[in-house]
Image 1 (cartoon, rainbow, N blue to C red):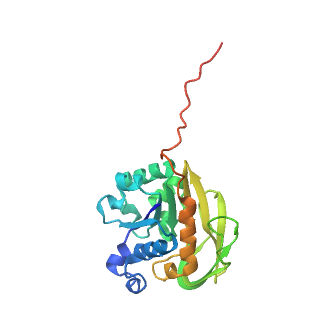
Image 2: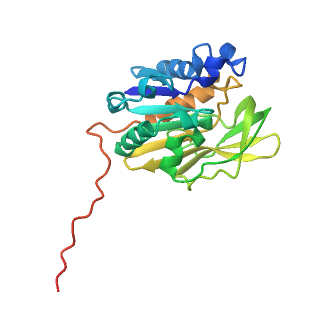
Image 3: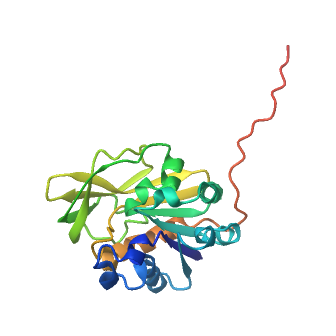
Length: 242
């Protein structure tokens, strides 16, 4: 299985927030990739960022990739539309996609879901409790309930997304807000998992439970073996009999 962890990498380049280098010396993508290499023995895990040629998402790369993890925040508009269209084509053909935290507002997620994907937010470093509400699902199996995140940005409803295929995790915050923090969708032949915990100001991706959710998500989203292409939904001309 080939996995690509994509991160815009802007916060890391500018050291904003200043503690990002302390938490993620190899970048958010580096921390996630290291966890996946440990939890998914045999998987080939690579990374790419916005500043790479074609954002590291060229045709040959995507054709050889089973699952992409996407972390974005402040540079959504800088992602080239042609690259977004390319990623979308591969997802429709069967490539798995995990969209993380502020990736909810990425071009690729909004395009695939067809809604604004907007939400309520507040960043005061509050405790987040991530409740496992479908423990029978492959992504949620073995995940404790709740996952306790000591400090995190608050994401709250209304989350403007279509009704998900599966609701796996619901988060609650000190201010009383709740959020559908783990949901799945199917588009074409591709499986999509959105998971919100993981703001750049906090070491959320260093938590073992969060890492396990991502590893489970990669396993679930990986396509079945075989040729990958979007479903053919073209109807032949109808022959009318009078």
